[in-house]
Image 1 (cartoon, one colour):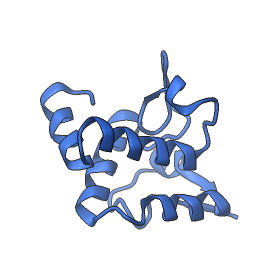
Image 2 (cartoon, rainbow, N blue to C red):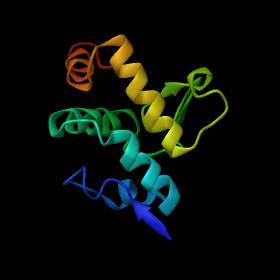
Image 3 (cartoon, rainbow, N blue to C red):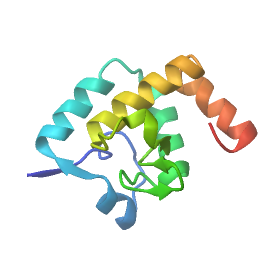
Image 4 (tube, one colour):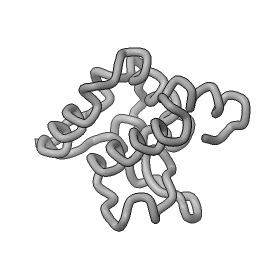
Length: 113
């Protein structure tokens, strides 16, 4: 079974975004658990960044960056699974900016985060 993890998080979707966000049911459950503690506002900011970084694509590549949030590959420690990307992205945004909304604000000023 394959689940589109953006269906409940992102109101606007394109065929490209839908195709690149499909994950297994087990990954979808892990992702839901990882993001359960985020407020609606934090989820919206996180998705705003994902849209701009990779068009929601978990396998997007750009030099040393990989995935939906374009994290350095070294941050993912060889585990490129969607669930690990979500967990690592949450840790990165919280540790570097304090929240996803603050990360979004930074992105808006610098066009990267």
